[in-house]
Amino acid sequence: MKPTRNDLERLARGAGTILRDGYSKEHTVHYKGTIDLVTEIDHASESFLIGEIQSQFPDSHILAEESGETIGDNDGIWYIDPLDGTVNYAHHIPVFCVSIAYAIKGIVTLGAVYDPLLDEMFIAERGKGAFLNGKKIYASETTELQKSLLVTGFPYDTWDTKLDNFKYFERLAKKTQGVRRLGSAALDGCYVAAGRFDGFWEFALRPWDIAAAGLIAEEAGAKVTAVDGRADYLSTPISILAAAPGVYEKILEQLRN
Image 1: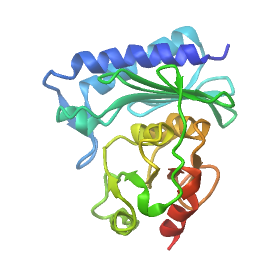
Image 2 (image 1 turned 90 degrees about the horizontal axis):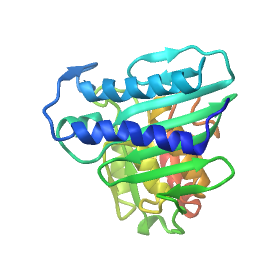
Image 3 (image 1 turned 120 degrees about the vertical axis):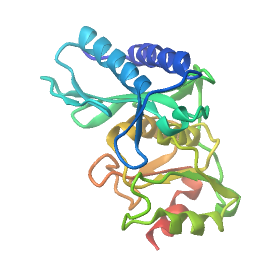
Image 4 (image 1 turned 90 degrees about the vertical axis):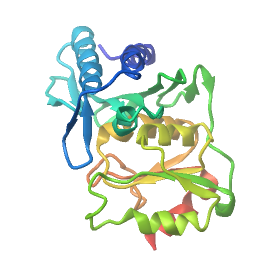
């Protein structure tokens, strides 16, 4: 049995309740890396999601941020980020979400990203459009780079990585209305889908970061690829460029230079 859009929405809302209820509390923070955090809420949300999925869809293949890979016997795979924006969450900054995607034979067919504080449910099913709280959403119609507003993110090894995103941040900040950094790749992609941002790029990602948001942006009419233009943005090395069609090529040109 394969999941439906309603299944993903229910799962995302359930995990979102855990995030919302724990938001104002003091958190137990552990470090996976120098600045890569995980809290008890990450684990609680992920435990809920995996438990629900395994109960309703036995033998599921699951790839989750905190617990890694659970091998299943079917062609479908779940991508779970139980709390995207953990650093924000740990500092009580209200920019975070839960992200869930489902793929069949490597093609993402369902995606849900839920912001529990704003009660915003971004959801998409391949070929059927993207929605925000039940209303269809579309990428922006911006065609001028100078009039565009972009968003990006930085990897946890940003201080010593060979791929320095700061130079692209500076370059594009000087050619646009500005570049924001929110701290949640899933929300960044969804905000492109909703036309709030005109483009989003980021390097050195993991599949659960962008599997759902990538589909949502695609279904909203954005062009979504890896930062080098490759169509498969979930293949290694994973990166993403999601942008309004009118500025996609212009952003890509800047990232290629």
